[in-house]
Length: 245
Image (cartoon, rainbow, N blue to C red; front, side):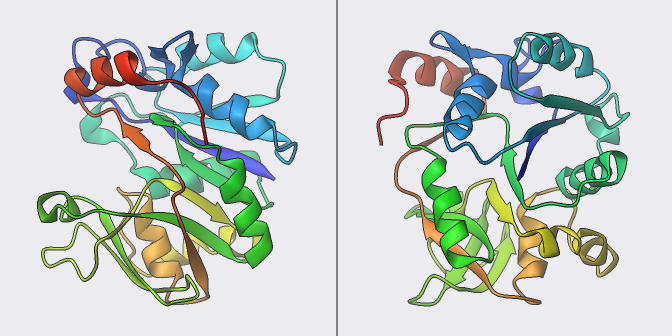
């Protein structure tokens, strides 16, 4: 299994902290955000390569970071240099697949989130379903719902529908940026793009994919810290206790 880490954003809301440095390499406690994620995933023993998808502006920072790691980490530079010219998450995924010739099951994650639970639980869930899978969490605040990917789910967790940033949310289930693609479904990314799925938000591909094949949504077993601005970064640095679930 490959682990694709989405890290090509510019984190403009965290300026000046991230004006010349990538958000996933910011430290929370004694480790970078990326190290928290990879150290956890590596414990499952199922990933044989981590692929960090970066923009051109920050690729050298990821190269320097990866050089000191004992696990196999490949940094892919998507060639963009500004927030205005970014490819978008779905096109970045396809760029990495094409660039490296990837053909495997894939764990696709945002590289700028901190979790208090182990992603190994999600990987085991996906393996038990033998389908592509996402996670979901209950969000009571309508103001937040309209900024997220929203899923409708059946009692057995199968996704009935998904929409990114809907004006009228059809449920309270939000989808965080953590996905599992089967090898067969990873091959369909070009078809999703050709069919007109959104390419900026990573959940847009899942919104299309669930209309083509069964996709399941595991309820998130803990908390996700979304570092969106300086205030939220300082808050997570003060509060985060590591993976406790």
